[in-house]
Image (cartoon, rainbow, N blue to C red; front, top):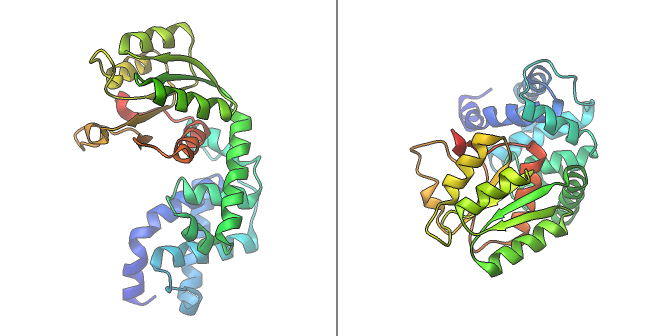
Length: 267
């Protein structure tokens, strides 16, 4: 492989391995597909299309090989965390294309047109596949949701989004004390939390206390993302900035419940 090409793709390989692992169901199987992709590039560099950049070209080549030899996700080999095992169980109920598209746009962060280039579909087709995937996740993950938000109009919007996805709002808490009390009384399956609350209390403190009692996925929805993205402590997995797009919140809810992942802010 030419040195320049090797340098172009090197930064993307760890992420391709992550993606392959999610698709294949195990690190061993996923790494085998990545090796096959690299071997194909060595054998025929023209198979690697750089016209849309190295990252899209690399994932596109991987997809051509994956779809040519696609197998069902492997049985667990002991390398997957409990969250990855949960995700695999849910992925198994999706069509292959919906599974691929969901992982590309959530796990890997590809934009709609980029995902379309990777899997060889139109943006409209990709959008439809994502909707199908989210609908399947919502069907599998219906749960109770605690909203920590002191602005009535915003909390109403969030409640409409939550209930529109088939979930149930247990409480809309306006203060940290209310939030913790509600969580202990009626254990939620998801928490949507603002940071700055009505009485000057902190949604961050409320979440830390809740996570001290039990694990639950958390999405922070705030006008002050810089208070969490400091680099000085573990940062939250899911963070949405106000004013928010309802579709972003819907996707965030689906993703958080899909991976059943707890906010790292508890650390």
